[in-house]
Image 1 (cartoon, rainbow, N blue to C red):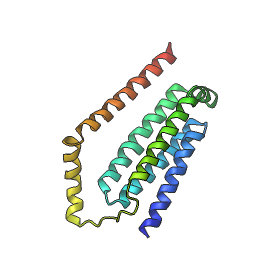
Image 2 (tube, rainbow, N blue to C red):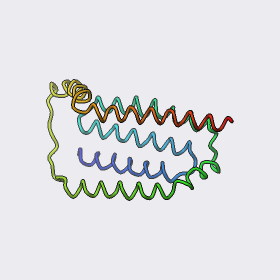
Image 3 (cartoon, helix red, strand yellow):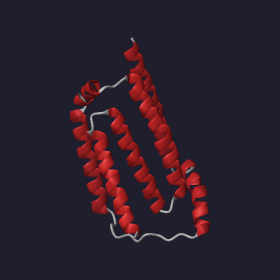
Image 4 (cartoon, rainbow, N blue to C red):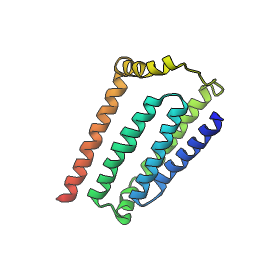
Length: 167
């Protein structure tokens, strides 16, 4: 039964992610992105990680989606202007998609596809948050800092875009 829910959530997440990049209306695209984020949160619940599911909902569905919608409304991206931005990015997008498919293919070729699902006790689930925090600030501190820098660059980029529009 768990596997059926996994496939349902994964298929809906993939379909909504495809809708995000294929729909021209930026508001509809943002709504499909929110659906994709919610499906990923559901996948975290299936993986017995309720903390990550809650963080996914609060941070991405809540904060990031509000930020995206504000950016769309501030920049006043209509369908015509939104298409202009996408038109120049098509060659880069094709290269990125081919690269991502290649990396996923390598991962699937080297990975173990028949790994069993783990069973956790309640004590292990409570300790999950502590272990996540400890790993995040010790073993994975560099990727954490890279993500923080990436978010900072995205904020500065949004500010630069707004400033160019106002001049």
